[in-house]
Image (cartoon, rainbow over the protein chains, first blue to last red):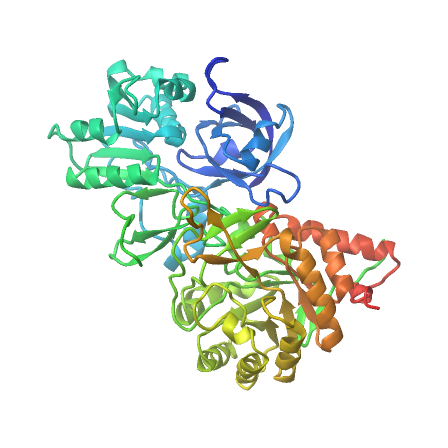
Length: 308
Length: 305
């Protein structure tokens, strides 16, 4: 839907002495009614046509009762700079919820409404059966995030915590960032609702947790031998990381769902600008639209190398 | 309320208003239906279909530029067979004129496309894409030369009774020469402009940004070029012109109508504002009434001297 959402909060994340250009944006309106973890919205950051395009943001938090969604963003360019200046209490044009989100452990309801509609209209073009809504719930969940990729995973973590699923489905977060300051700034309280042992931090400079890449502790977690298809790794981050994560999961016979990022123009599946290469259930290689068949894909179906 | 006639007819193609969703920005018409009814449009030009399926170009395919968008999708489409079997049957209740956009890599391809769609009840007109800048062969090559453009349009004309619109490229020395050639060859109307060839380089990697190296520029940045070309083409041919290129608000639409366009394409603006066609239609109507006109036709070409 195209909704005018009221800005409740639009403030920098972190503390006064640690700003990383990260912002928290809480919007009130109708989008919360339909939003699902892993889906995204596009926001018009200016009433003019410069910048021309809406900006896509993962939905990081959903509060249906209050009619609120939470987005986090990093100031990257003109659009996000303008967005950061939007006063609280004003309205933003928001399109969404868009795309297909994560499978939801425990309930496994079909994830994206937009995705379902597209599927109904375009049977031959509905993309891969990425997320089987009938599969049994995972026995274990690992959220693997690189940098601000954590923002997309917050929605899934929130879902798991809100529905008290962590007792049945042990949930671990493995999250890497540049340094301690970045992690401090991009952290939300949500993370600390998990037992401490279930959070693995990684930093490139070793200022917190493991020194190095997310994939290193992830490999350790996966190699304990007790995991299998019933372990689900949900990942979001830079493409090189997602590729490494999906390859690790394949090696250890673990399921994975990865949330991709691409430049988008329409955000609804019309322009075919944001495609990635995927292999459908029949093994046919084709382009999947990150905005429509994704942004969440089965780690098995995304092809990172071969040309179509 | 003053009655103002918004309807436009282009050689048998009847439209309730002059607004057409530009090919390539609206899929096969179904996608934006969740946000704005297809019936708000006078017509919808569907994404280009080619005889065989096409996977399109490698990514990145998009680059935003100041008030503009570079794209190099590469005519990704499911091919004619799939288009007829899966997509066309769903278009009977779109409550708008359906304009199928066709392209190919040889004159025979165009013949085949035109004759195959000739009997399709859900197709109200054909737009012949001889101006795509993002494919290696065919596309813009046909539209850059009056002779070859005419050859394609003649082939299409001989294979269909449907109204034919030739979609012209701005990447030519003299667009009026191409327009004259395609009209002579049987085009019922011309639509212009397709995108302007452009390029963006990533200064970090020092490489072209787009997977296809070059792309087509659209959006408000190109509008003055479109207005100029519509203005010139109006003087050169006696068929209706569908003016497009960066039209984003009703003022832009009125401007290009005054330049000589009988109908107006809205493309890239939909991405930012899916309600653009509704707002633009209301704006044209209000402008027409305020100027004492009874029909949108009265405004066409008023800026011509």
